[in-house]
View 1 (tube, one colour):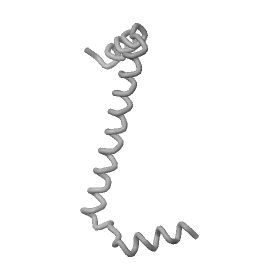
View 2 (view 1 turned 180 degrees about the vertical axis):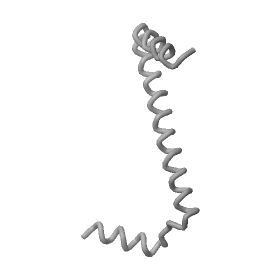
View 3 (view 1 turned 60 degrees about the vertical axis):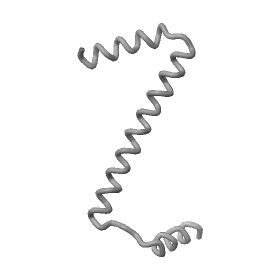
View 4 (view 1 turned 135 degrees about the vertical axis):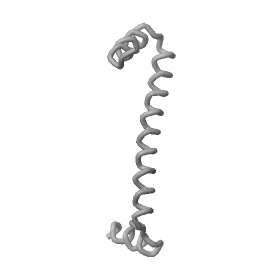
Length: 69
């Protein structure tokens, strides 16, 4: 089944679903999208670590203090 067909069927399912179904489907979809975003952030962080783009605890503390000024 093509993506377009799946989207069309999902729209139909959502349109015919009751409140509980729609709210649960929404919660699942949002959770999935948030997980994708977090996975991407983890991958970027791992790349930074491998590239040596890290800060010591002292450097981080100084950065935080500069934000407070």
